[in-house]
Length: 149
Image (cartoon, rainbow, N blue to C red; front, side, top):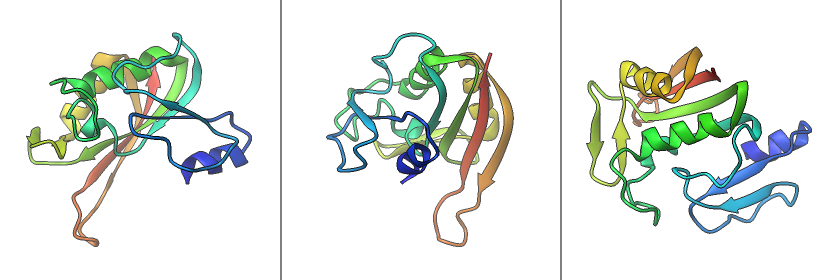
């Protein structure tokens, strides 16, 4: 998993999930908590990675409370706990023709809506890539490398 690969590279890794902890590498610190209210001090981290989580934040799918703007709150919390100038690799879950919400499954983003949310949270975009889901029959996903202002 990505967390173990980061630990292999010498990073001190903290893994946060609202669900029960998965069984994994003992070198990784696990914190069970909701991502829309991170239990860490301001400017605690050198980097953050979040893959396919943002689109679910605040939707109640995984036992988290229902919060209409959970994704924006989560992104603002990531900015808060990052050191100034630090990077965040964020996957803005499925892409759509327009912003939307699919029940409690996930939210859909456009590049513009993702950028507006990232900018409002205090990030500047460094780069982005759209992962084409056509080969696997999945939806497209937008991954952005963001720098905290």
